[in-house]
Image 1 (cartoon, rainbow, N blue to C red):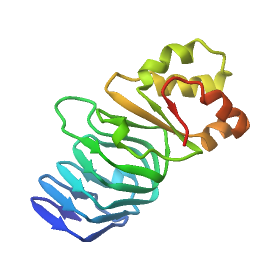
Image 2: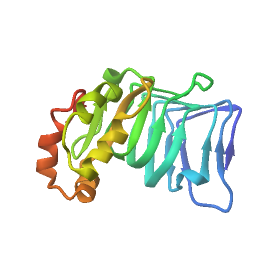
Image 3: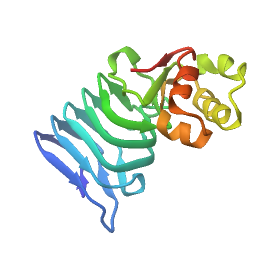
Length: 197
């Protein structure tokens, strides 16, 4: 599917795995639309897309994807996201995320750049969020976490100041770190900027 140079309103857009890559943008504005995506990150390109309102429903885990050239404004995210970057990491891109709702999404190893964190509805436990994670780095490095958990938290906080929120899934981390999820929650809650809902 190729969609560009138009305004689409109140439409369901379904992206299914095909032999080709789905290309959305440039100059594509989606108003109160629903995107139902069955594709992985390698099968979609979003470049120059503005999605205003509506729902982005990720049916299959979206992995290692950047939305640096996409604006999401008042979008509700559903489904599974792993290693996804929202917003722009570099000034040459104009990606943004504004007033969006992640409360029903499952998110792991993902980041939001250059946003107003208080405008986001963050995911609920077992997902967690670290606001301004670079500011928590000193705290993380000063504690003894155990090797696997320490490496994970090192990655979450070793980010530029443009990263407003780091997002993780405690269920996934507890498996890899071989620690009970309740014990993990106790350790995480004292990290500066940590939000557990």
